[in-house]
Length: 204
Image 1 (cartoon, rainbow, N blue to C red):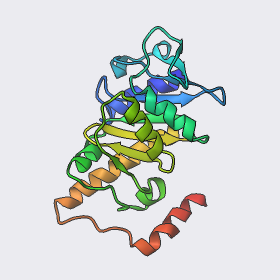
Image 2 (cartoon, one colour; image 1 turned 90 degrees about the vertical axis):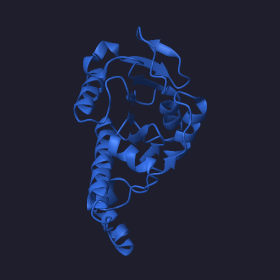
Image 3 (tube, rainbow, N blue to C red; image 1 turned 45 degrees about the horizontal axis):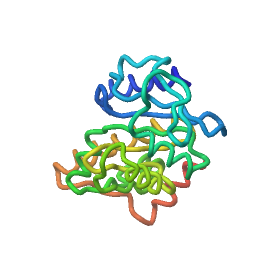
Image 4 (cartoon, helix red, strand yellow; image 1 turned 180 degrees about the horizontal axis):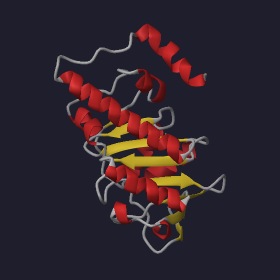
């Protein structure tokens, strides 16, 4: 699990979804009330498995020599609220953040977006690393797969790390398509009366 976290950080930096020291990720360790989380302030492409730290749901350091990500508040808040969440990812996705800065909501412009994303709320700016942000993200991710933090980044939650990554990637790809469409008059959405049918395809 530590190797997977380190590998995913380097991969997301290479894809432009994180900056060198920005962003973080965690995975829950079964039903133990403990999680592995990326450390604070480490250059992501250089992250190694033994840099990953273990904390409990109160943020107490259990294993590791580095401090956990300052965003541990929202990681633990999501796990407290979502029994199905086993991984949480925080990216600095530029196109998605750009749309939010312009006041644009991510919309179901593709079948994949409709199936994977659902509604993606935009949270007003709150201080990074704060308990206030932790509570707000925890509340938002209770019934959503992703949320956008205004002037900050994206948070996704999944049943495993691969799902959390996929949600972030689909969100950024959708934002890119919306940006391109905006240059030519705007995006055409999937008809509202077909959205539920499209989402049902994910269950096949």
